[in-house]
Length: 271
Image (cartoon, rainbow, N blue to C red; front, side):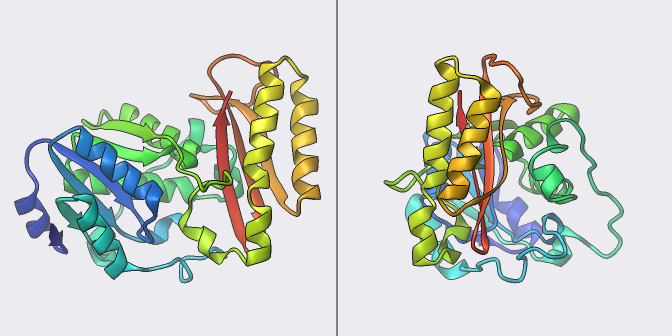
C-alpha cells in the first residue's frame, strides 16, 4: 500500500480506474465496507484521511475528534487498499485560497439547520479531494444519508465526472449505527443508544402500515426522550430532495438525530 503525503506523490500513484473512499480517519467496519465495495468494482482503491476543519462549527469537537493514523493505516492495508492520501491543512486550504462551495436544496434542512456551514465545508473538501484523486467512483455510507444527497447534488450540478455510490449502514448487533464518535459514549449511554434505531424501525413499520405520520413521528420522539435521548429532529422526508413529507410517497426516508450525553447520534431508515 502506497502512502502519499504530497500531491506529486499522489498523482504519480493514481491513474486509470479508481474507486475512492474519503474519510476523516478513526476507521471502523463501516469504512472498511466501503473499501470492500470499491475492491469489488475493480481498478485501484484509494482512501483519504483528513480531519476537515471547515466542516466543524466553532463549538464543535474538531480538536477532540479521534486521530488514529497508525491503526487506520494498518486497517486499510489489511483491507487491500492500494493508495492512502494523507494531505495536511496547508495542502487542502492554502493561505491564498479564495473559494468555498455554497449550497441549497438538500443541504438546507436537518443537519444543515442544526450545524450552519457544515455542508459547505463537506462539499468544499470533497470537491477538492475529487480534484486531487480524480476517481471514477466514490463511496459513502448511508448512515450520513443527508451528506450523500448533498454530494450527489453537488456532483450533478458541477458536472463532476465521478459516480457517487452509497453503501448501506453497518450496525452493531443491537442496531446502533457504527460511528467514529461512538467511542465517546459512556457505558450507561451506550446501553441507551440502540433506542434510536428501534424508534426508526417502529416508525417505518407504522408508516408503511398507513398510520398517521404526524402522530407516528411524535410518538417516536416521545419514546426517545423516555429512553434518555434528546431528539434534534425525527422526520419523514423525500429520499431525493429531503423535503419533509406530510403524506407517504415512495421513495421516502426517516432522518433522525438525537443527543446522548456528549454525543450526537445520526441515523436513518428507508420507508
